[in-house]
Image (cartoon, rainbow, N blue to C red; front, side):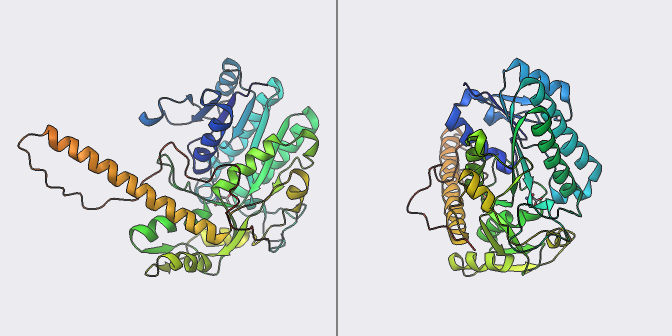
Length: 372
Ligand code: AKB
């Protein structure tokens, strides 16, 4: 079968990496990105559609016109932003998903839906959280994710839609395409790397002892691809699979970064996101995903930190070299003008089109996964 893929919300942190992986797998021309903003200059070479997922008719038109057979539905508001704008969070997260499932039903599409550890709440066991457990979230984002999971299961059971889902933990990855961490509670775990390298200091909005399940973006992308490529008969959970990789406290992340950058210091100023983090769990039991379709993670905390720092340093070098080359060209062209380089500060760059993670087949030299 020829895959024609639509990725909604493709310019978010996970979307940028997923799109690159999908393009590698299925070919650039088979992967259509979409988002609410017009595409940026640098991405004009790639298929892209402006799409607000709450506009079901436009979604259907795009699906039909481009013979889409699979949707990776990443568009949505995350937890912190969702608390600031609960109505919008409900509208985008629920009505957007409903539109995707409706078109999947009528056009026989396959769908990926990202759920989240945000489905858990005050009465959920905090350690080794089981696949089947209490889901009583206290955030609007969490409420939309529980509802979303149930909607997926309903469309799968009632209409035979092949919709597959993961309860993703916090994702750590390089910021891509000017997509800063997008309003989530786990954003600190991305911001901290940029701050550590740029200013050697970071003010965290969570307390040091806050422990959350997390995953490297490379592992998350591979999880999504493997879930979607698994044999239909292997998929036994139609709400959403627990998937886990690592779990660490903010203080443990800081200590790991300090092994590379001893002068790095972190201050703590908890804000409203602390209550959100406290309502989530610490570690997740993902044995069902491991048993059903062979999920395993590759990156532990030390591998994540080493890889993030190395990738960011190499991006910085690339950007520096690019700037120097541009500067030299400008100097040649500007006869008689002063060529004094007065650039005060080179911020750490946003990644460009290429993915910065390991190939999808895990490198055997990577550390053995840690399982708690
Ligand atoms: C968030 O922090 O809102 C997300 C999530 C855990 O779903 N990263």
